[in-house]
Image (cartoon, rainbow, N blue to C red; front, side, top):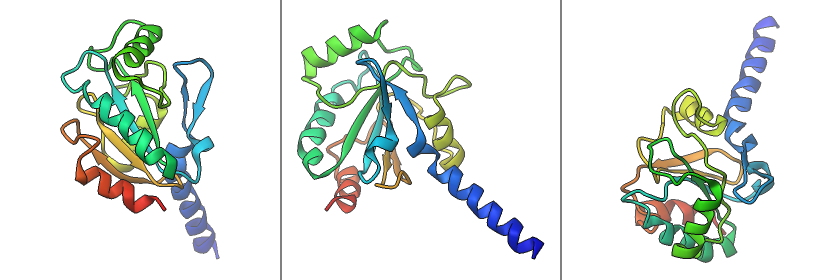
Length: 173
């Protein structure tokens, strides 16, 4: 009986760890909070971004994904980060840069650490579950509608890449 109870507790703990990414909250670039829980039932693509990076042009593809797949339920969340020393100084500068240069309307977090001891809890949970830690800007983490990690992608995988869009299509009606 004790073994059954212990196994049940361990399984519940395992489920709680798996659900950690969906429970994450990010400070919004617009003020307030962006909670992944609010998007339960929808797949979410979380991307650590930077305004002064060689991959910054991917913002255009992220906006296109938001426009194209958003109607079918995908949420694209940009998480500006200075973890690689390539982000502007303030959130207001980041927001203005993204609106002016890319017409961004997708949800954006405030400037957030994505690696190291100060990494956001979401990124720590992803690392704990998968071993994936962003190695540069524009890494992508795809969550299914229940917050489970489906796939991770490095900077070189563009948002428009079939490697990524096939995974997104499989999650949408």
